Image (cartoon, rainbow, N blue to C red; front, side, top):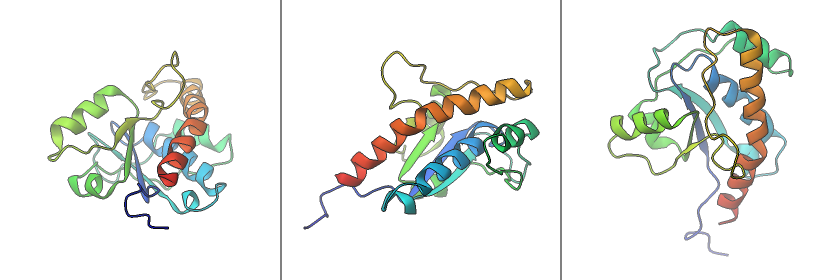
Length: 166
């Protein structure tokens, strides 16, 4: 079977938020964990995170670390990185937390990537599409943010399966 005309499964997925210290590191770990349970080719997808206004090398928010530790995932070694034009160009799929992130990417990158979506974009209509920034809030806000991400993972996996199937 010739697959040249089919869209292959994404090889690099980038999760994006503002500073890459709260939401996108949690999204990266959650999606990586979910993909590890999938058959090939999804299992081989690489997931990284970045921020549209990130400084490189910042530590992840302690509440992000704690929110994911409660579900058995460790992100304490994460260090922030900006969404560079090079990283965006290599990405097969970019998943943002809010429309403002998508807008910033559209303004900052030339050419504008065609593969930019919201994390919750593939969910059924009526569901909130954006994930609010918990930065500076209590642990409960980070846990709610995590749970909104987890809720969307099946719809992201289904989207990835469709891409892989062509």
